[in-house]
Length: 153
Image (cartoon, rainbow, N blue to C red; front, side, top):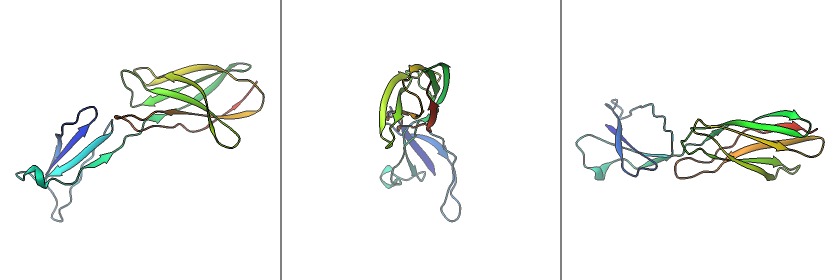
């Protein structure tokens, strides 16, 4: 049995695992895609027309958010967006309104290592909630950080 994959940006399938099925017809492989990936299996010697149905696995970006105050009213938001890409990932910082609606505050791009950072001034006292998101594309599904509480001033 051969397992084939096609990961964006490629559209061609290639063999990534081979093995023997168990007596009950099952097989197991450890596969860890780093981008949205399509898979199918084919018994060796059989025509492609009898391959298993194609399964698509969406890989979500893992996004972290840290916040620290550098002076009254000014905060550094930073984190990682993985898997990293040479061209980086678009990161959007949102403040959550009291009703839970996401309000865009700023945008930044992660670096080739996946790290990102931005300095933001916030007005007002009290505690606000923030999160970051990445935008999905052909290679990755969108990602979302956990919510961080920020106390102003």
